[in-house]
Length: 342
Ligand SMILES: Nc1ncnc2c1ncn2[C@@H]1O[C@H](COP(=O)(O)OP(=O)(O)OP(=O)(O)O)[C@@H](O)[C@H]1O
Image 1 (cartoon, rainbow, N blue to C red):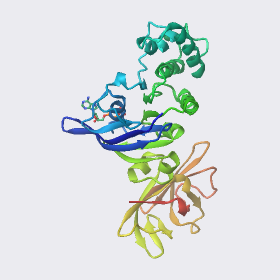
Image 2 (cartoon, rainbow, N blue to C red):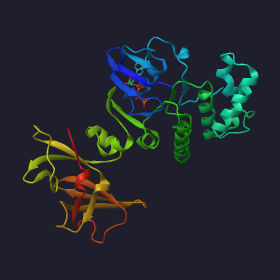
Image 3 (cartoon, rainbow, N blue to C red):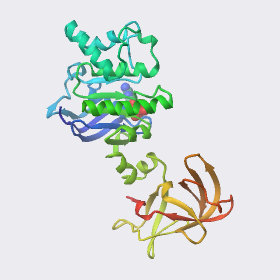
Image 4 (cartoon, protein in one colour):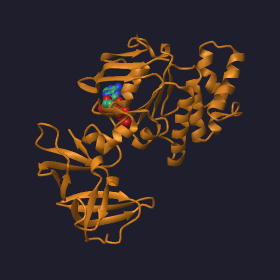
């Protein structure tokens, strides 16, 4: 297996650039999630990796071999689409063996491979079932088995789980990740769901406007977002205007002591995660405000605090007794988790 390298990959449709100069190095065996809002270019980028779309500029290289001009069917990649594209008139086994049959693999080998693939996706004994008689999750697994049938060099999936209900979807995220770990296959999944990306990926690639905003492991995009877009898109965040003040940075509600702007900057924004803000008695925290709303979500309690006209969200387990609506409150900030955004 080999590294995937994207070098300045661009796709223009007329004058609009769906993908704009994307460069990325994906080490072999990595699970990548392309993440971003609708229209950011993720599907177009995946299709260029697959060979279903020709780049306007740039190159797609796998293992040092430039595949930019190689058609999709000759790349040897496995693909799963949102629609799954299973053949409804065929059985599970016939669907899975389809790519093997068009490659001329003989029947005995094919039968052995089907059994292996059905075990892999946890559908043993389902070979003779009509695909129309499967649940959504089972159909998903058949599409995955079919894509893996040819031992693909890359495993590419476009919103593969979006048709599933929330619970099944979370279960399939874990399954897909475990399957990928076992096979060690380089995998690229398009999703617009940040939780899904955080669950599965080694490398989260956050895109907007056809460009990569940040490509990093999940914990890093969460803890050290590259910019306000990423901070806001991954999880939720309080993005505050900050200016230098004696001893730290002045923000709505008070002072963040010990923090400073990047060299040369006169103002910046800071990102503070809700879980890094804790309501404390007035006068005992870093910031001061007034409680506007409290919601108990079961696993956590969110407190909306207005400070200097800005609403800050604090989240944590339990609720403090002083948190009546309209009451003044302090907010303690976990300072070493605050990110000063460029
Ligand atoms: N064949 C095409 N012709 C013209 N414009 C296109 C074509 N395919 C995509 N686009 C445009 O390119 C941009 C990126 O589309 P793309 O489908 O890659 O986004 P996406 O991030 O996958 O969005 P979504 O999550 O909604 O699928 C969009 O503005 C889209 O309208």
